[in-house]
Length: 417
Ligand SMILES: *Cc1c(COP(=O)(O)O)cnc(C)c1O
Image 1 (cartoon, rainbow, N blue to C red):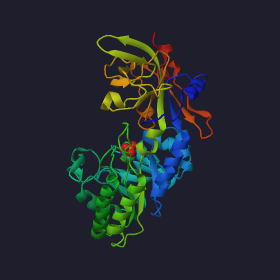
Image 2 (image 1 turned 30 degrees about the vertical axis):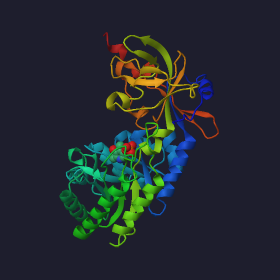
Image 3 (image 1 turned 90 degrees about the horizontal axis):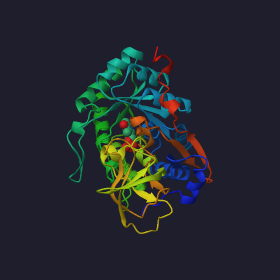
Image 4 (image 1 turned 180 degrees about the vertical axis):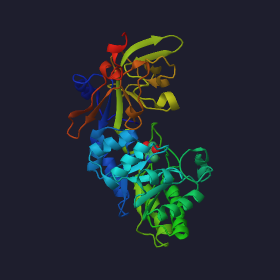
């Protein structure tokens, strides 16, 4: 069973100040989860989680994670700017981008961030722009398929990211000639994994690569970045990852591969996004229309512009009708938004309690890749983001957009000149 972290009563209180739709985040859940993660990797002296800013680019959230000891993983100019404004500096920032524009490299270098090169050709680009920093990271793509116990998890050979092994070796040699002194290795092989084996398997691959790179180039490996990819159970009854077991699995690979090679001082980094935030966010919307044709539809005041995952991936997001948690799910609905796009459905053929207009609908697990993927199609406006604080009070993290925001990039005064 999936239980919302807010009650109908609480939402009725909040909507008096902030009308629906909005994303709401659970500070207590975020902090407790971050602490579990840090504990699971506390065996590694240099361990650090760099929260993937793209998952929830909201200063109020970054601040909480900073207080829990996290850094940030950025992939664009504005993410770097936001991180700087939130007080992240130097090695608190990983810059893991691809097709990286010059200005992004320049800002990352100015902030003294850990730069993760996605491609071999970026060595020259960075060198000509601003020189190679003392610490530098390269992203690895092993190609082929990535499987755990014969089960294919993802297809790195089809992914645009990273360098081949030959390129990694060559890159480290060239980077050393250009003055780099300490190196990182980064790789992201599978997304939203529900498996305690993903990180340990990935770690073993990267640890073995680290030993090989060190042997072939003499490069000093400072950190290994396991990146993102630990998933969350979007469906009820889906098993949950056990971060303690995952941390232990990585430790075992570390002791079996790195320690015997004399590399027991390598720091482990992670760049989790989904795992850090997804379960601790809900999209709260109101049922505003009902129609019955060949199917039964409930229309919400939120739409795919507020949460794209169902529309673009067919992703499942659990739905709770607030106040009807214990009623039987005897009605079959499509839960839709109002975009002129038939894929604007939060749920299709979902069995739910009878929904009445005015009911508040809680869409679960929207804390990561939720608000942040939003867009303005059909002129729909982005919603507010609200923090449910540990003491039960609320704080507005970001106000809802108004039509003025939507029109801000036009100058109407000249249109009819
Ligand atoms: C998206 C991304 C992440 C975070 O991925 P999650 O699936 O949210 O854990 C981490 N690192 C990089 C480079 C990414 O692109």
